[in-house]
Each structure stands twice: as C-alpha cells, then as structure tokens.
Length: 184
Image (cartoon, rainbow, N blue to C red; front, side, top):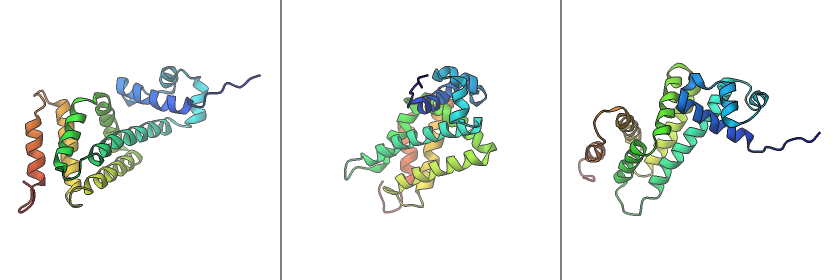
C-alpha cells in the first residue's frame, strides 16, 4: 500500500480554520467543517490537532504572525527621516480598508481572549510585538498608547456607519504623539 504524501496538509488545515472562522465564527470551526474546507480526511484532523482548542490556537497564532508581519513591514519600510506617524496612519488606513477578513478574525480572537487565558496570552504576545515595532520610532512609554489607539481606530473603521475619515485618523495620531517641544 502506498502512503499518500501531503507535506502541506497541516498548513492547509490551519488556513481552512481561518476561512471557516471568518465565514461562520469560532462556533462553526468544527473538525468536520474544517476537514471539508481543507479537503482532508476527517481522521487527519485529530492527527495534527488533538483538540479543537489546539486547532484554533494554531490558526490564531498564524493570524497574529501574518498581521504583525504586515504591521512591522510598514514601520520597517519607512524611508530614513520620514515621519513615523505617517506609518501608523498607513497601518490604520490599510487595516481599516483592505483587510476585512483579518478584522473579522481578530474580533473572534478578542472574544476568545476575554474568556480564555490561553488566547489572552496569545493576544498579549501579539501586542508586545506590535509595541516593540512602534518603540523603534516612538518613546517606549508611548508605544502601548499608540497601539491601543491604532487597534481602536481600526475596529471603529469597521463597525462605524460613518465613512472612513483619513484626516480624523491623522489628527488623532498627531494629537497623541505630539509632545511639547517635539514633532508637531
């Protein structure tokens, strides 16, 4: 009997979890639904992920890594001498306009984090990485405040019935980051 080689199966399963959660919420991410979405045998689900929580944690860890990489890339690619506040504005505008699926997934993760410490730890690690990226351009004590403003403005951009207002975002970032004697 020949064994079927499928070295990308675990990755396909993780991506399928994110697709299923984006479409049906975490409650819809059953082994059966994910196996169907990933086009894998149901038995391989428990082989790769012994519990539903292990499945969700792997998927949300992937989400955190993906979104943070995008976040960090915007800040790392700022031209020398440019205003890092514009990088923050670009992140808010990009996440607020271009990445609906990830926003849905993030809100699902935040809901889990409110109830379960394991997910709260994952979110905390993600926030620490974001704050470290911000601290390369801003005072370390300001990075958590910028991060909170950024997350709040992105969330508001998705749930607000008003249109996305880039000028309001820019004004909020400038107001928070302007210090007496500093950049204005």
